[in-house]
Amino acid sequence: METAVAQAKTKLWGGGRSPFNVSYGKLMMWYFLMSDSFTFGAFLISYGTIRFSLNTWVDHNYVFNEFPLTEANLPLAFVSLMTFILIFSSVTMVLAVHEGHKMNQKGVAKWLFLTILGGVAFLSCQAWEWTHLITGQHEVLVNGVIERWGTTVSHNPWGPEVMFQGHLVATPGPVAFGGYFFGITGFHGFHVFTGVVINTIMFIKTVKGDFAKRGHYEMIEKTGLYWHFVDLVWVFVFLCFYLI
Amino acid sequence: MSQETTHLGTSQADVATVKRIWKAFWILLVLTILELALGLTIYNIDLGVDPNETLVLILKGTICILTLAKAFYIISIFMHLGDEINNMVLTLALPACLFVWFIIAFISDGASFRNLRNTDGGSRHYIEQRQHFHHPISEPAEKADKKLD
Image (cartoon, rainbow over all chains, first blue to last red; front, side, top):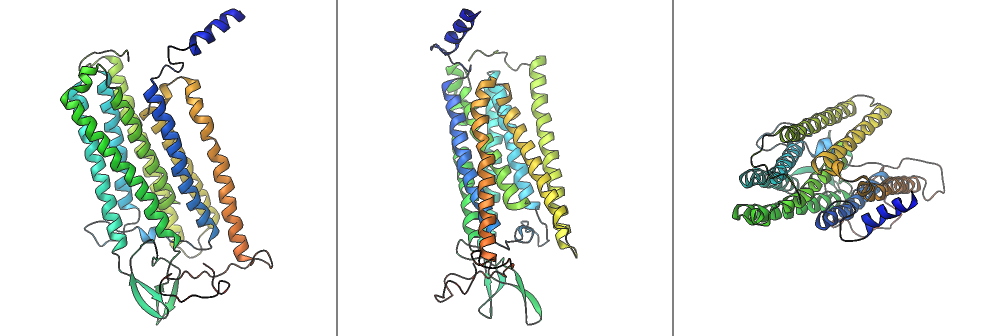
């Protein structure tokens, strides 16, 4: 009994094969994603610490209620669209990987192309959101004077409201908000951008037939892992900044 | 990689895999819509006369649990971690459990900072201070103890 177990252990960890039945590249991608998730986790948790340390914070329903091409008050609408775009691009990525398992070059190219489109759409939405926040003209009471502020890393107009000359007007908001919002969504957006670049390279290689020649589409699977990670981080960024 | 090279396969396993992927998509969509519904509910409660803080907290907690469910589906089905060897999954899942300690420690740190702010370093009883946040450029240099940032 003991010799059988010892033999099985030697066979699994004796070298010459993957004990987890997974390739080196895929396993290392998983461990990179784990390290990156701790980086994002650290950013988001420190954001939580600062939020918890203050009596007031910005009201996200009030800050993020704009939608392109309308003047309506639509809390959560635009960011819901962004979440849907990213989840959908994740589905197209999984389907691309699935076509890769079947060695279907055309299928991989089609679904990979849709994934790239989804990534570009998400980045465009994020660019609109940033532009809209930075160039915003929100009334704010500063030193007894009404100014018009956008949201930047040094100031924002989302502080508690006070009565001034008969109507409610905002005061400067917590300075940390800008740095955290642009920093975390920017870092995530950078990951989306690099994901789009890598996906484009993979698309070109697929169309050229490099993977058909190689005999497997495992590279698509590894880039797929990175893309799903990007989607996963967005789910948590969406949670921390827009929902809770 | 030793995979079946059935070109343009419509085998039963193939159809089942694609169905599983789309099923996961619909689950994620429903979870997201639920989260949004709860988020909008919180928005409407906060607009009301006397917002029930406990209810808001319960709704926020539910949203967090729904997000964790979404994370589970994305990792298990989209990233195929559910199909990997258990011991490999553990080399990822066990270190991830450090997040629990991470979150508890730093959120309670934040709560402690707030408590110190509101009790002036622990020297008096708790008064929730009205906080003023200032434009860092337009304000002249002021004594640190005059304002609470």
